[in-house]
Length: 169
Ligand SMILES: NC(=O)c1ccc[n+]([C@@H]2O[C@H](COP(=O)([O-])OP(=O)(O)OC[C@H]3O[C@@H](n4cnc5c(N)ncnc54)[C@H](OP(=O)(O)O)[C@@H]3O)[C@@H](O)[C@H]2O)c1
Image (cartoon, rainbow, N blue to C red):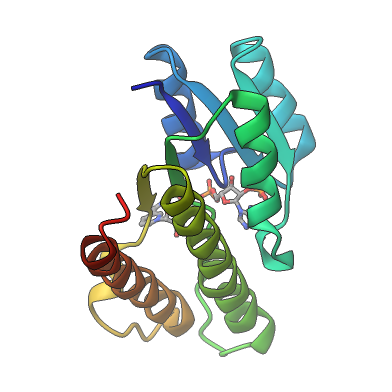
């Protein structure tokens, strides 16, 4: 099996760490994020094996990113939906709550649907997403964050059963 992974939110934190680990293991990596300079830095870490896509997940369009990565890397075998946002929001500010939902629910769903359809059409693959231990219970300090991560876990469970029922790989 070839090793081509697409990671959303690979400019920092967990996504960047997974990208570097995959590069160490010989993968080709498609990395997305909004910070161009950090994407360029990742590209320099392994010339010829990193493909970067400037993308804000709250705008949709994950299917196009996957389609371009498919061409540039000669196939995508693994998609890791990692891009996420959360902040303590004691005043329940709409800007924080809605940014969380737009990133962790809208952005996640856009990528999950696109990746599932891509794998179904292309003989299967591995789809992963980063949820959180915060998903297990409602949270008083960042309610949208906990709820959004519960959505991620529940949705992924749905896709796992869907994949089993459809034998879509
Ligand atoms: N750190 C923890 O303790 C922890 C625990 C449980 C779960 N998580 C989850 O792990 C994932 C990674 O978090 P992290 O801790 O590594 O945080 P981080 O360092 O802030 O990384 C977040 C990543 O998501 C990307 N991102 C955020 N909003 C985006 C948007 N609108 N469009 C595109 N990319 C966006 C960021 O890229 P740009 O800013 O370049 O766009 C960045 O690459 C998240 O889903 C988070 O909820 C983290």
